[in-house]
Amino acid sequence: MLNVQNLEVSYGPVAAVKGVSFEVAKGELVTIIGANGAGKSTTLNAVMGLVAIAGGDISLNGASLLKVPVEGRAGLGMSYSPEGRRVFKALSVLENLKAGGTILSRGETETRIEAAMARFPALRERREQDAGTLSGGEQQMLAIARALMVDPEFLILDEPSLGLAPKVVSQVFAIIAELRQAGVTILLVEQNVHKSLAVADRAYVMELGRIVKSGPAGELASDPRIHDSYLGSAA
Amino acid sequence: MEEFIQYLIAVVNLGSIYALLALGLVVVFGQLGFLNFAHGDLMTLFGYALLFQTAWGVPFWLAVLIAILFAGFCAVAMERIAFRPLRGKSPMSLLITSFAISGALHVIFQVAISPRSKPIPIPEFLSGYITFGEVYIGRAQIFTIIVALASLLLLKVFLTNSRLGIALRASAADFDVARVMGIRANRVIALAFFLSGILAGIAALLWIAQRGAVFPTLGLTPLIKALIAAIIGGLSNPKGALYGGFFLGALEATLLNILPDDYVVFRDAVVLLILVFFLVFRPNGIIATNPEPMR
Image 1 (spheres, each protein chain N blue to C red):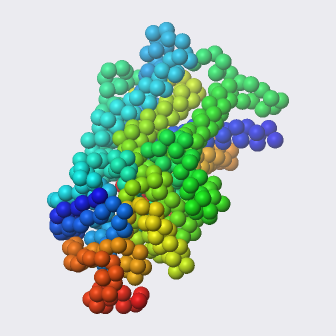
Image 2 (cartoon, each protein chain N blue to C red; image 1 turned 60 degrees about the vertical axis):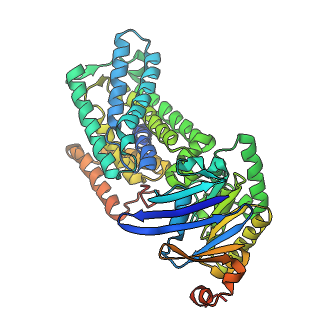
Image 3 (cartoon, rainbow over the protein chains, first blue to last red; image 1 turned 180 degrees about the vertical axis):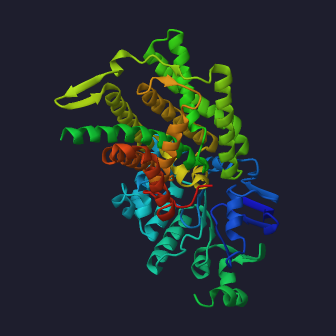
């Protein structure tokens, strides 16, 4: 489904992503793990077209995305829940969901909003409330619900559990597992390595802009080096 | 009591014009993160469009409608010609470009039309007063209040109920995330400029209705008022422009009432002092939903 080849991204003279290659097959949940500043979020931003790439290729279902503008990606079945949630704070919950359904018809938008409210009952209660007034957990639910408005084939989640209470983190991962079961292809970047390896099929480990290891998530979870570097405190 | 009613009318009259002006600045700031200093010139363009049409015998209200649309399209043209090639550059480049556009337009108006003030024939019913007991209200003031409040209401309905309005606000809140949702950048930015032009046109109509003339720097004073209102209210949210506009209106009307006649000349100085107070102590304005500049 998604194929990234020799991706390079630089911020001025600083190379943030150095020749990264990975793929995500249809129906898979793939996670990229790594320390802060490893280039994970930059990689996701490059896949979504939000940063200019210095080299390499990104393709979805065999077609290159390099010429597709950011706003064209939703129409290809891609959706993205960014790091830090980035809900539209001055817009109500309902308006956030409507914005998420920009490419849909009015009827489809209404149907998808109903589906989102059914999946996240807390959002129904707060539908008229400004998103900025929601708790961190609720904002995260809204960010995921907004990304799900287009019923994506391919969902990118960037740090969905960052800064959330442990109970809410478990809820977020339960939703991710549920989406995986429903057949949504997911690319997940997470600091919570323990939980992300538990839900993922495969994983890539990034260090200083390079992929240094990859394999089935279960195998990596039991890799002593990964265990020592990333799972020490969580396991 | 009569004085209070008159004061209240002055507040709503000034406040609603300032709110319209500030909103025009804020809708563009929301998208591109810069204050368009050529916004006042859109008002002047409206004025000249109205002037020429009335001279050619176009009925006044049809001329007004055409001139408002003309201001809207001029704003879109401004974006297409001057600001789009600079997309992605720092807001400072866009700001300086807007100074350049404004300067160029002033010269064009002076050379191609006239450096002098040109009277615009205002319909009879907008001049004179209506009296309610001891209360005198200018007809132009009543017209201003009705048109401005109706425009603000329509704008609110558009921004909250239409898909385009929601797209505009979403993209003002977070441009990149809005694009990810499929909101088209070019379309939404063009829409923001069109709206700002329409708002400038309506504000110009109200401004001219109370003054009856157009001249090359007509837009300068209203632009400064708009800047003050937008900064006081907060640049990140249309609500801020609304609050800032009415706050400035109330402030000016109050100063006019409380300052002794000899000190009325210091009104603008007091307003600017309060602006400085906001810049120091509340730089994000009354409404600060998004303290980070967009881009």
